[in-house]
Length: 89
Image 1 (cartoon, rainbow, N blue to C red):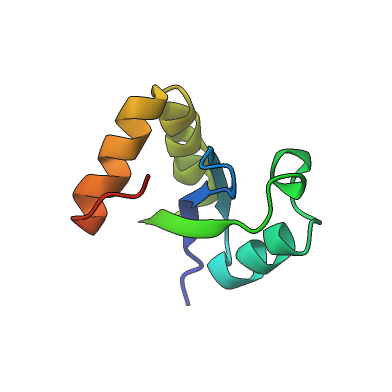
Image 2 (cartoon, rainbow, N blue to C red):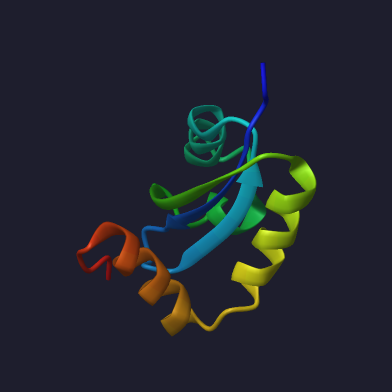
């Protein structure tokens, strides 16, 4: 059995975006919304997962997370909206 890792983008209550990685999307989203996952999202609840990508290992997920975090807000929004085919903000 292969354990996948995920890079995800959350939309916060204040319309800011948060990027992270995990091996369990459901558990991580719950932790964020319980205020136990990130200092950043804790004060911007609730959060909604608007984007994720699958990766075969932790290393590639972490590298992609860094790459997404380096994108401008505009480019993050474009990435998400192209995947969803609808506006997010």
